[in-house]
Image (tube, rainbow, N blue to C red; front, side, top):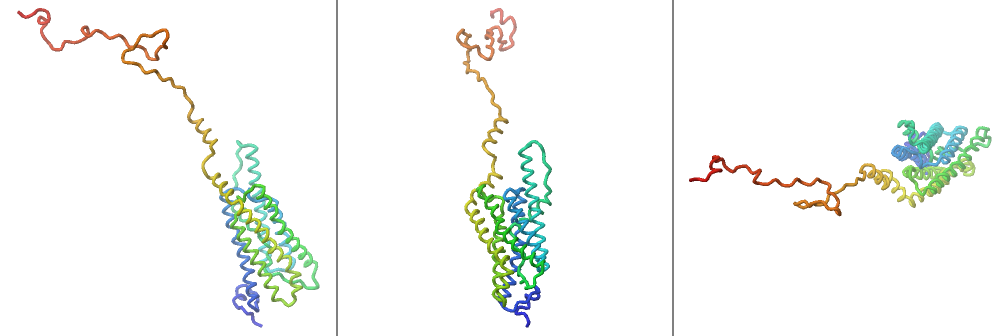
Length: 335
C-alpha cells in the first residue's frame, strides 16, 4: 500500500498511511528542530555574562547521566542513526557545559581567595563551545518515534529498555537542583528563558508525536510498553518547565535589577572613596579684610599676615618740577 504522504516519505524516509501518522512524523521532527535551535539563547547569555553561575552543577551532572543513559538506550534498541548521533551530541555538549561550570566556579573561588593574583583567561572559543551545551540541559530522549520490542527481545534490547527508564527518571529529577538553586538565590539570572521556552515547545511536540502514533498502531499495549518511558520523559518534564517559568515570573524584576547594577553606575561607597582619594582636604587661612589705612598692631589683636606698608614720603621732597624754568626764576623774584 503506498504511503498517504509521498512528501513525508521523500523527506523523512518514513511511511505515513494516514493523516494522523503524517502529523506524528511532522511533530517528531519539529521537536528535533526545537532542540537544535534552543542553544542560541543560552550561548548569548553565557557569552555576555562570562559566567555559568546561573546553572546548578548537580543539574548539569544529572542531565549528563541522563544523556548517557539515553545514548545507551537508543543504541541498544536499534533506533534510527540520526537519533543515536543526536544522543551522542547531547552527551558531548553536556560534558562541555559541566566543564564550563567547574571552570568558572574555580576562577571565582581563586579571585575571592587571592584578589591580587591574576588568573588565566578563559578562551572565548571554548567559552562559546561550552555555552552551546545549554540545549542539552533541557533535551528530552531523542527517540522521535519509539520502536516496539519483539517478544523475543535480546539481552541488548533488555539493557536498552532499562537504560530508557533510567534516562526518564534522571530527566524527571534533573530540574530539581536548578529549581532549588533559583529559590536560594531568589533570582533566575544566568538562565536563558528563551532556552526554557524552546524546551517547552520541544517537549510538547515530542509528547504529541508519541501520543498520535499510538492512535494508529494495531497493538496499543505493546506500543505503549516500549513508548511509555519516552513519553513520560517529555510530558513529565513539562511540569518542571512550568515551575521554572513560574520562578521567572516571580523574580523577573529582581533579575532585571541585578543586571542593571552589574552594568550600571558604581556604588555610592566606591564614588565616596574615589572622591576622597582624588580631592584631599586642605585648610586655607583667609586673611581678614584690611582698610585703606593700616592701624598699628595692638597687644590684643593678632598680627596681620601681610607686612605693614611703609609710611608715605612727603610730596614736596619727591615731586618733580612741573615745567622746565630757569633756576633764577625759582630763586629770585622778577624785578
